[in-house]
Image (cartoon, rainbow, N blue to C red; front, side, top):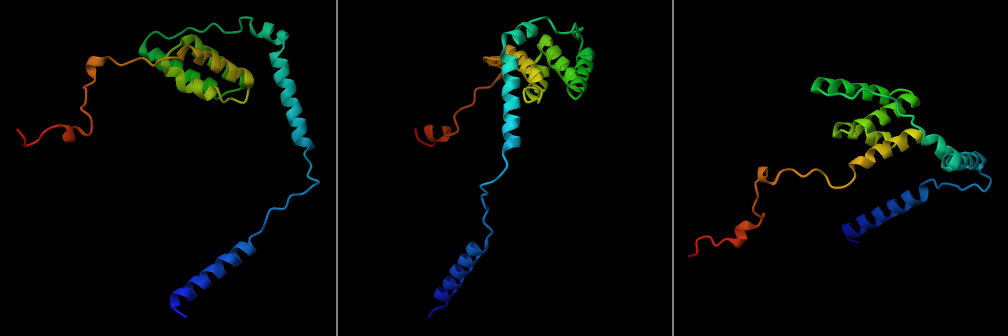
Length: 164
């Protein structure tokens, strides 16, 4: 017997032993899923109460706080820092941050609003999504004159080099 065949046989034997020796997950027929079902029911009730007409009437009331929006560059930086502090605070502060950045309407608040979409509080996530609606659509195009037009990458193949 050649050494190659012997090595292949030993390798196959080791692979077979490794596959047979692995622990397999056991499915239990009596696993308790009542906690998961209760959580799902709570989430369904929460979504239904938010979607009810009474909740829509309450949410349509003007709840946005009056905030002085920045005008100068220094005020913008301080306002962004304040929004960041609010976004890391309690649920009401996070909601205030999303509403304030929605009122402000500057692209500098986009990272904050994108993080707010994934907030565990549904009101904060809704406020962030509503504030992001303003930025949907085409991005602001850069002026065409400032961007140099580059030739294609394979321009060397299209030019006749050394030929008259």
